[in-house]
Image 1 (cartoon, one colour):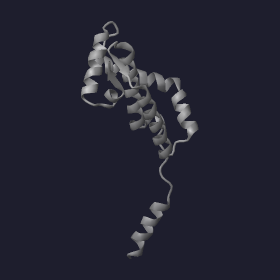
Image 2 (cartoon, rainbow, N blue to C red):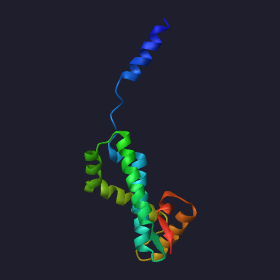
Image 3 (spheres, rainbow, N blue to C red):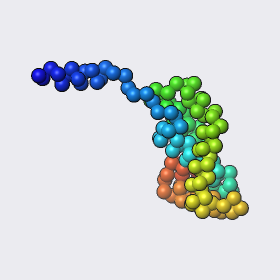
Image 4 (cartoon, one colour):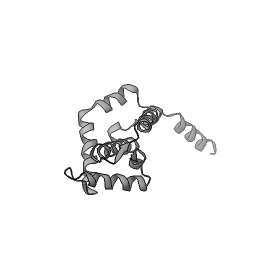
Length: 132
């Protein structure tokens, strides 16, 4: 009788992992891409905040390695990053975040306020920004 549980455990370990979810649904990756877009909008809209470009580049490389380590192929990653629909979705979520936090395209200071708050709170968004 004790052999049955051991066989079941062994069989479970031997079965292939469940298929990966589509990259568009992978939360960690999408959250970081949205954060990067928000940071980019802040740095482009606020004259007193810059982007930490080299740091952001390093984070992008880490994110790609994370996706590869999860089992996504380079072709899948590239297709996701090149997808106009996914880019539009990420941009829309980022814009929604900015609007909900008080950003207005006609008010650069509104973007500065958001950027300073993100920097002060040491968020992922804030880590991609630096006050001038």
